[in-house]
Image (cartoon, rainbow over all chains, first blue to last red; front, side, top):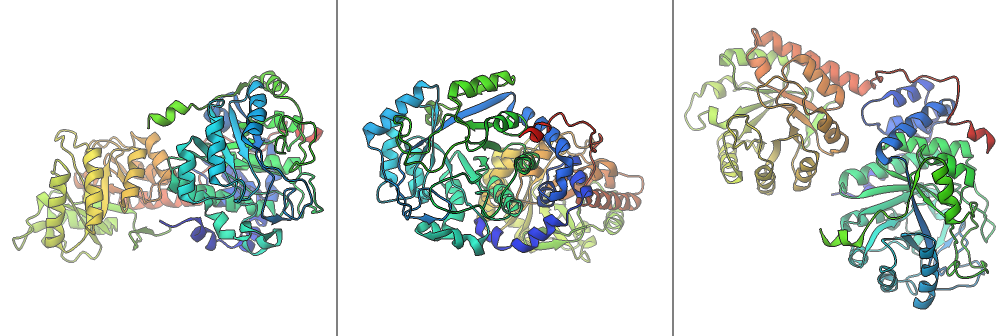
Length: 374
Length: 258
């Protein structure tokens, strides 16, 4: 069966941008009132500029759907950076190979030292992150790290370089349950402007990664665009199409979407597009209304009050207490970091804020034992 | 109304017709004509594939739509595969409505045997449209083995109870990559219309037309109901309760503070 590439090739970036701009308030109301599954046309209406006049109605619908599907819970996870080495050169990223920062890939001892610390803060779901350097953090390194950490955590996810189906299967065998891989932008013709060197320059290899994950049978796949590169509304429509393609084809897999907005980092790239909080809220609500089942995740890139408010209105998963540098939990020197976070509360503070809202912080939502019953 | 495509073949009508239960081949032909249907299903057990002059096949010799032989009466995958091969040879079509109902009372389809038979028949070159329980997981499994469409039931065959399985049908429609044809239980034009409003790709009707006082008129009623339902779905239906702008903004006022 065909991959998302064939779907994307049939989509026209400029045409979709124009269609979004032409949406009317009636289109938005029609999408909000729909009782059947929303389609791409409806989603275009919900992310359109004119939908900013219906934010309260969107928030209400999104809140209803989120409560019905996810209840009054907030899932918590923490990223752990294993390496900042990278063979790519991406203009927006602190880890770009041309950035003159110190490079590090954690040893087993260093991994355990960071891991024991974050475990003591209550986290059961660990997201392992690396740059993209298959010479240092290759699949064997990753598999070893997962095996090392499994006794400590209920759930281990990855955000690393795109891999092959066989490599993903190997990582699933050692207990990886989810992989997050962000396309950054679906705009094929400008993609190379941001990605100058390394394997990440190959648009299609990255684009087809979620298909490879689906083929491998991964339990959860995370998608996202980097907000700040291209028109976020158009990118969102492509991502929604990607999500629908994957959900229909790899129907045993769960999906998650993240909303990374560019944050200050090493290097001098300034965002091409600035998305306001109001616009990000609109985008999140549009995804929830489009897809009641997808997990929507918000990282510590965002401000504490924004995160607290968006929980339950659409957001279901939150990272907390994050550091974005390898070994960052056991050191006070953060010169190796990918970007600086905005919400620097401790995990206990975030959990308190969640409870104050009448929600339950969920630390554990998986168990290795479940993998042996299949 | 957009046209329907199944296995690469285009249909301008979204109403499929069953040929059983009619008082006469003539009544069937009247209903066929007034309904505008381009896909009709014929029970293998009802026709004589080998003798010339079978009344149903004879009546259909000028029909230019798609003939869809069905395996009604078989009890398991093995019998279904045999019946299908016989139908292909005799009727010259590889299209097949796969029906396996070992239970003669309610004629409820056997999911396990249906999946098994579908996989074998697809590999053997058939275009398979299986009649099934309104089971969303089964639909995905059939999709994986290469079914051309899925035909979940709205209610047991011949009961005219309408869309009793609506909650499951909604899930099937939402996640299917194949055309969804709602089959069985559709007892009135309003049921057919409701199925189309839900987003079904087509409906199959037999009993309600065949046993109507005037099948010719009833065929037309179903044709119009299917068209209305589909057009309504494609135009975007409003929700029952109002969802307009609201004066206060309790959920979004925090955005002003950020």
